[in-house]
Image 1: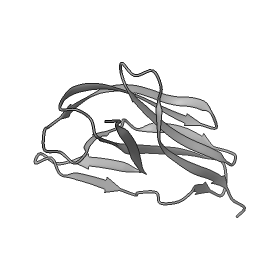
Image 2 (image 1 turned 45 degrees about the vertical axis):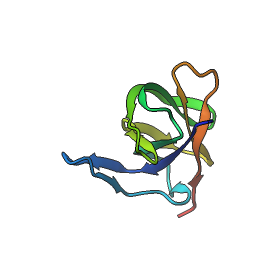
Image 3 (image 1 turned 180 degrees about the vertical axis):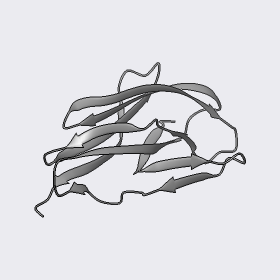
Length: 126
């Protein structure tokens, strides 16, 4: 079975002691600003159809095809989970032109990254 991934892009993620995940400031459309501005975001990376056990995940965040963040994390998949999720560290960039933010992920031993999310960036007139 092939695994798949997606990402929820947001301003912050909080995880409570009981495991509940709070997504703050979720983006459902373009990331827009009316002047060049510094932006800090994060994402909740979700995987479906991973086999049970421990997995090492490689992540890349690109802005207009240039990598702005890469990370490696550990994901423990239980036997009854619909999907497994891992919050990404904060990533920062300066929005100064229209373009595209892309989050890619793969299992450590996989050859190719999957695109988990793509969201447009827009510099709008005031």
